[in-house]
Length: 180
Image (cartoon, rainbow, N blue to C red):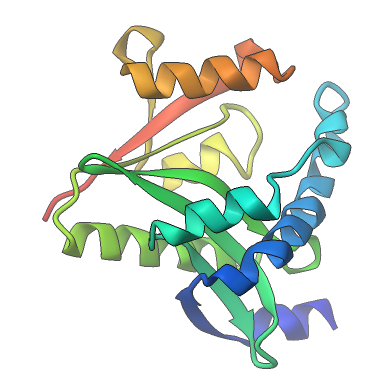
């Protein structure tokens, strides 16, 4: 059934306020993938963004949801505009729908929308060495930023993540420059 659901994703749409509680559930499901890495397995049971925080992010108008044919969200990308850039706060695919190109489609949509809007870049923070994190983003044209190249906003995001217990040596900020 999982592959049936994943292959039946028919629609990418803008996230709405009503999606907020579902995004927390999807984040929890996607986070289960971290259990394969002993150092960060605790992330699978860590604190997710609250529905209230998702509502704030969604209100910015840049977040997207992937639905299957029964209009059930199976993936999302939560994004805010930061000046002339977008920042990805959370990007998750339900665990039983992962590795089927759904996330790639969502990210491609976001890149296309941001490019069409004339924005300069998309940023995020992630694990540099987890296959579905840093290497995935690199395959989509994102580049890891050296610590001395971080602007104050990205440095603050990374610092907050490290304060929450994420291993500093494994975290990085990434940026994809856009051409309009």
